[in-house]
Image (tube, rainbow, N blue to C red; front, side, top):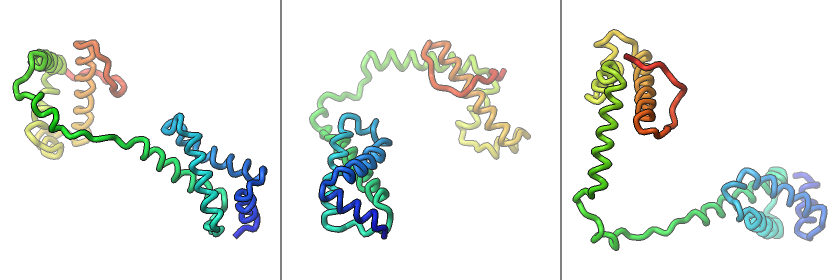
Length: 192
């Protein structure tokens, strides 16, 4: 148990300026990693941590098993997590009040989107080529890479690479057809 830490804790509880500055700096540093999640509530969280520290240090809870700085970080981190949890609690509304609004029939917009989506999917599949369609067909049948590997004589690793390249080719084709960029891996040559 460090005498310096005990003295600093006592000085903080008594409101000595140097002790308050030191511990406030530790509080600020420990809140740094939470600054984006807390946003405007960062200073309120720092105040929550100060109150909690004063309460705990005032009753002598700090025993000195670890350093005072570590203790301050732990209390501040708990205060930040509690604030984030408190601020992210969402009210759940029962869906019963919307029961009469829903219908089992698709709307005209749903029908149009499905038709358009089916058309784009078919065009993407056509652009990817027969090897990709065959490979996807085997996977959709529920066959494992090991089974496909045994039947085709191609290693499982090579099959996985082929599936990846087919997926990347499909993403690029969809982007070309819909003009909607999607996140993808680095470009890979199209399989034919």
